[in-house]
Length: 184
Image 1 (cartoon, rainbow, N blue to C red):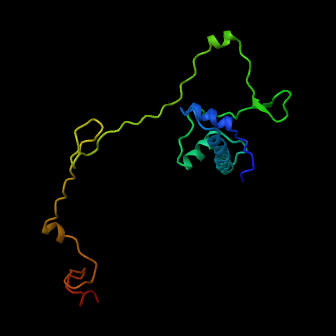
Image 2 (cartoon, rainbow, N blue to C red):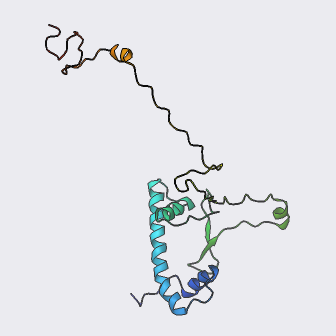
Image 3 (cartoon, rainbow, N blue to C red):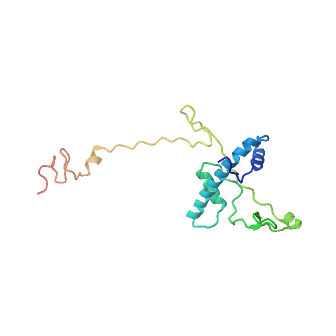
């Protein structure tokens, strides 16, 4: 209900709104969006947990989250395809706060290290397949090839095989027509 406080604070909603070019989101709107965002996040995490469970894993991965997003027709997360699960530690002096455990690096190590591979970008190139029923000659469109008509068999080729049925007017193996008579 209205009295329940969401763990997604209005300040968090306003920060997210600011990051997606909505600089002046009203405080009341941010307060109203908090519970809905929390609900959607819970749904997403539950779906991701189902993917992990069906994969017989106890650890939730970014692939599970991406699969849950795809299932809901949402854009997957790009650039977070790490196979190793994140390692969290308790923050010193904060009983309920966890943070990512980062190893300490010297500046020399950072300068000498090769650059990481960039995230794979998704690209879409539209082109016209047909315009007013005519396929334009573009490199993206394969050339149209008309199927060649099969040559009909001539009477000599068609009569060389004997039918095994006993329908009237059809030659049977015994050489009679109409299925009457035939082999004794």
